[in-house]
View 1 (cartoon, rainbow, N blue to C red):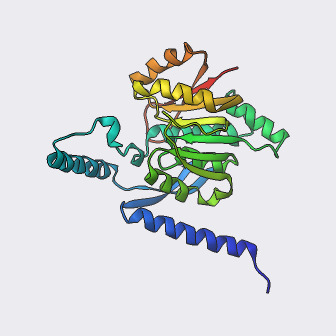
View 2: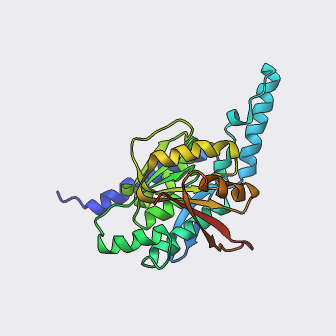
View 3: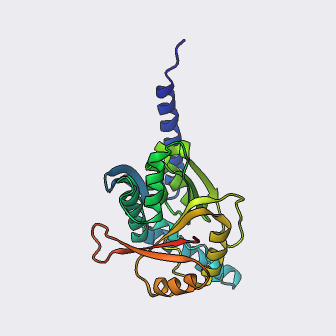
Length: 266
């Protein structure tokens, strides 16, 4: 009996896709659309109505407070920010593709790695998408051939990330991560983060996480939509020994560009 490996893999991928989608749709209404990131296109499944998900969490907290007389602090609520497809994640995805897909025609650390990849295609480039949400930045990185660890505190986010990265699953891993306390015992060439510096109380935790997980010669790439907190973060992180470069990334439908912050140690 001759087994067609490609057909078997395709059947396995379809079965896994259907299983993941079923688990997601037990709780969330979703929409699947074609994403065009530069020359790269792929199917991406996201929450159809993020506001509804947030409202459900708020209603459940109101119900719990009425029963117990106690209200959780905001940092205990696990508000579903992951359910929103933020402009910063779209901007970070476009930046990854722009700098990598065009043979490294840029001046970022990512472009330098792309040029090195041309010379040494066997060298695996490792990335972690921190606070990955539904996984857009990490999916784009995996499409480009990077080996990606999708990391988020919220299990539903990781379900979406796993579903969206299925075509490149051989280069993808998934892990629940709390950047405040978790240490992964591995380092990455790139740490990706979309919209993760809006809360000043998290900066010191992120700084420690970056130090523990960035490989020599690598870079932290942060997508930031232009908040005042992002402006304040730049001198704060620079004062802690990081070399910072700023890039602007246009995205369709947005008047102002997304700000991309590159942090390096050398």
